Amino acid sequence: MAWRLLKIGLSSRYPEPRMFRQPARLPKGADVVIIGAGGHGLACAYNLAKQHGIRRIAVLEKGYIGSGNTGRNTTIIRSNYLTPEGVRFYDRSVQLWRNLGPTLGLNLFYSTRGHYTLAHTDATLRTLRWRAEVNKHLGVDSRVVNPDEIARALPMMDMSAGGHAPIIGALYHAPGAVARHDAVAWGYARAADQLGVEIHQQTEVLGIDTRGGRISGLRTSGGNIATNCVVSAVAGYTPRVLRMAGLTSPIYVHPLQAMVSEPLKRWLDPIIVSGSLHVYVSQTARGELVMGASLDPRELHSTRSSREFMTDLAQHMLDLFPFLAGVKVNRQWAGLADMTPDFAPIMGRTPVDGFFLDAGWGTWGFKATPVAGETMAATVASNRNHELIQGFDWGRFERFELTGEKGAASVGH
Amino acid sequence: MKLIPCPLNGLRPADEFIYAGEVRHMPDPAQSTDADWARYVFHRSGVPGVKQEWWCHTPSGYWFIAERDTTTDEILRSYPAAQRKVEAS
Image (cartoon, rainbow over all chains, first blue to last red; front, side):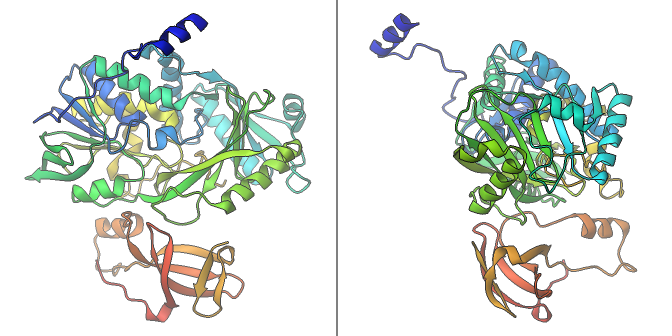
């Protein structure tokens, strides 16, 4: 190790190959153009190339890969949702996650931790029982646990939550996991690149051209591309991309903030969530506590951080874990969440032929990365919404058939 | 803490207020199609811009309109609800 480091230090050449090529210019045309090189867009490109044999694929990214919500989330992976549509979809995702590291040939630090959703009120406990029964029915490992069991598993937690919100039960979901989010984007990028997918960073989409209700091309900061098929896989910018295609949607944008503590010796194995206290927390492999809370209360297209968020979240963390009082916050940040009225995504075909949407990922997008890639690629290849995303289709609002996913993070129950 | 200009109470701390979304035009339910009604119920103008919004100063129970730039979070002006202007879309 030391010898290799010394050799690299003395060499003027970087010893590792790049993870993916950086093509000099945009192609004139492509079979599929994907807007957004986050986990979702790259996973879609990878699956289109790998499973469906489509080769002329360009992925366009305004910033750098994973610079949006792929690199800003709190990395929690779980499938203990409330609706059968949600549970089936996220369960497939967890199955894909378990093998994703070997599939992409990159260590994603996928770590199964177990996941506790705490109940402080009877109303929450009722929803947790509901979720547990739906989960069990669909073969997902979730059960309601009582306070004694929680206290044994988490002796460091104040079961009275500072005296004002006693914990009366929890939903325990053994498959709950965390993963290294940047590695997910880089792993998909490399695997897609090896299959011939072109990834263009620093390329902003400026306009979408249609002819007779069909997609005909894209205008970008790097030139025009002729294509009959566009997939929008952006977060926070979906309404702007839709406007280019002449569409409006129920999506509205609120910031979601998060923060991380200084590294601590490992003390927290599972992931802890409290909807009532607006806290979710896990400890990374490096020992930092990654913490999140609820959405910012109003629409905002800015990734600014606020002091109110940090102090409120710290206060609720101390309700659960008073011994953290002397621990410092290392940094805080925000991502832009595409919210939907029913807390479920909007996926698949749209009223514009050849324009597909992978959007509305609010606070629940990272965990869906592999399954979103798989189902969007199948949808694009067959021009039919994949079976697993039929509950998330564009037309459900017009039919007044919402999916009602109250199991989503940062949703009060 | 951020201060918000209330037409009734002057500048007050942001946590005394609730935000209730953009001022929107309701189509006549008797005249509109199901699709138009669904669009009114669910669709939003999600793109950034200066928007007319409903706000309430909760200690005084006073509802009013604020014009806010949703890119910078800056409130440009606020006025009583009776002065709102909503165009049919």
